[in-house]
Image (cartoon, rainbow, N blue to C red; front, side, top):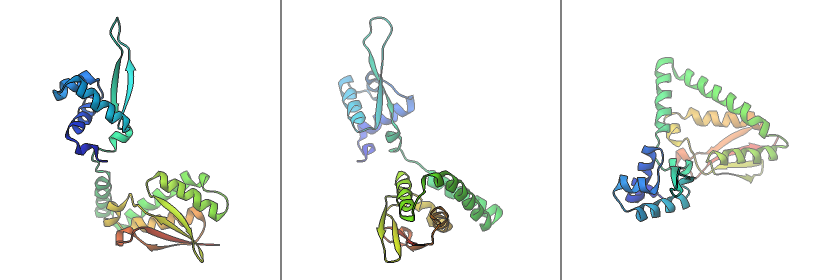
Length: 207
């Protein structure tokens, strides 16, 4: 659901994001709506996981107030340009130092990921593949595993890096190389979302 498509709820989120948080009274004043209406929108957004609240007790005899702030899930609804930033940086690296420099950057990134993931990817090849799927799913790849005649198929039904990969296909090559190093097995890419397939599919061969 795109909450930001609802004009009032969108305004509530933007108001809270700009102020760092606030009460129903604060939102009502900022949006020039009634306090009950502000409270209703805040409760709806909190129920959807886009806001989180804390009770602040006032000094004296004032009633406790709920202070609402944007949650991490709420932040995810705001437009981000991380992919464009990444593409711009890689383009500048390529322009200044050549295509080989981009490969060096990706190799360095692979090494860092390898060191981070290796302790979690242990055991038999099938076990390592399942553990890799878990890691990829944490990153939004919607990964799954299917048996094949020669081993397994690693399916990635979503490509979080698609925008960057459109301009730098070496990112896909780097990904396959990382999987080979991590799984200690031969890995061949069969299909790519970038080329119109429903999933990026890697064939992992039994050793």
